[in-house]
Length: 473
Image (cartoon, rainbow, N blue to C red; front, side, top):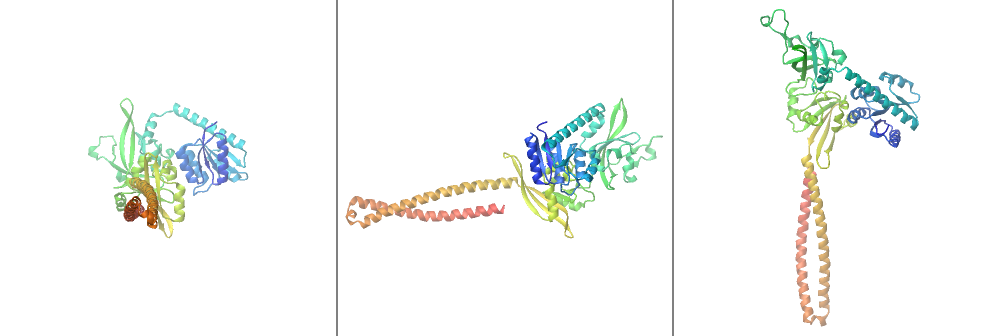
């Protein structure tokens, strides 16, 4: 095998560099080299490498087993672990991940390459088998359900859930196995939200439920999701309507946020700001954000339901900020500002970031990130810098002219002095005429010196004003 991408996850830099050297020597491509476990999850989702080579014991706020499980479940990527020679306890824990490939440190180059090729081949074979099985058992309704960019389920005539999509799992925090087969009504929080028709409106023998615009769904963690229900039917056999599809839109009042119980006044303040704002907690979850940030996230390809998950599980969030940077900000309780550039040389966007810690009893519980598009200002700054550079070049050229004129003045002065000190030549009409003309030139040069002095004063004033405006921006 050649050309496969490998993501190296190792916080011992010397080891990581040595492994990278071996892999490049054997024609593998390096997808990245990370030293933090949360960054590993994010990078795996962003780069989709052919293999994640992860050292057990890597630093970070999350355990290796949990992080590896997220990479496998979220992105279906193979992981090969590097384990110390005598770490039998860790090997036992790793077996919970369905016996992943392990290589013991220290290892030879030959063993490393052999195990990598074997792991990639085994994974490709498993993916192929899974795809063939999926093709043989295609459920077209489930396929369509998975394309809906919102939480969605199907229920049968008995009201039991028959299918769900991934976004529904994100919303309710229940797995597919926990939802399918259960009556949908059991997940409604209040019976007041679901009203039956009056007896006068009901057909004898029928039970008809009228769904309101909004219902409260009970989630796995005990929280309540207030959602708008959009409902339709699936036509499968003839004119029979055997199943109903239900799509849910999360509702949180006037402003849409990634959290529940948000104070509406705070929401209005956030949305009134010209800047993009979002708030992270210590679990790396986005707890609040305003509409301007949501619009920016959509431009990056991040959906509303991805924003409900920890940022290290959102691969495209790396364009906003690195997880290890936020971990450091939480650790140091520090406030920080930085400017980041996006795009190419031809078309760039400059974003100013301001990170503000929110502390309780001296401990940072949340980190506010304020983002401002300063592209226009930065382009003006660069234009000013270019003008300033050109200005200084012209000034240097004029300085050379002044030096040359000073040399010319010295030569003229020598001519005058020569005439004054030589009485014999002073009586010569031609020499006297030359001395007179030279004197006129010297007077003009003196006038030039006065103008030059004024010019330099003006030049210094312009330069000081430009620098003040530049620094102020």
